[in-house]
Amino acid sequence: MRLILLGCPGAGKGTQAKMLCERYGAAHIATGDLFRAEIAAQTELGKKVESYLKAGTLVPDAIVIDVVAKRLEESREGWLLDGFPRTLEQAQALDRWLEKTGQRVNRVLSLRMDENAIVERITARRSCPNCGEVYNLRAKPPRVEGKCDKCGTALVQRSDDQEHTVRKRLMVYEDLTRPLVAYYRSEHIFNEIDGNKPMQQVTAALTAVIDEDRTAKLGVRGRAER
Ligand code: AMP
Image (cartoon, rainbow, N blue to C red):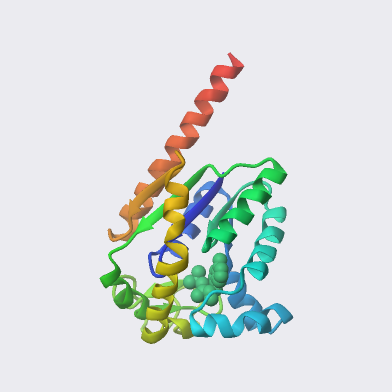
């Protein structure tokens, strides 16, 4: 399974991606998570990308493409890309990599969001710095205020989830990432899903598309074997 999940900041890509990867056994390649882990571990890469994440701007394409190519190499069994590609340059680099390795993307799923709801949704987001579980103070609050349900660690707000940085990230999305919807829409592997619905309904819509693809693929295999 090779999937791309598109959507603006706060569309719920991370939450949905985790669920889909667990369900279908694909590697979850989330560039934002990868960068945050590098920053926390204070690696060379972490030091290089930290200022971009803080400012809500994009990490330069060359760095991102290099990081993703390494992860793709390690995940030949299947993957879901969450937060990549984010520019036309990245999408074209991915196309070249796929062609070189004889692979294809099965499906591009794009979460459509009402942008007025986004600032409110992102600024209510909290996460666990220990296990990575993500909460929302309104839609999915922790059982005990400020504490992770899974491991009890004190929850934190991502530094780029503060309102002025969120607004910057949304502007960057409009300028650089939204054009990817047009880039992929022309292909028959593109689906747009309403991301404004409750989380479970969005998951159901995403899995319906993926399951249909899998059934179609099994059907083709079955016919070839008969
Ligand atoms: P995310 O967790 O996907 O919202 O990403 C957080 C931040 O990581 C972004 O605001 C960017 O600074 C950086 N980032 C993540 N993915 C990419 C990418 N594909 N290209 C450039 N920057 C990225």
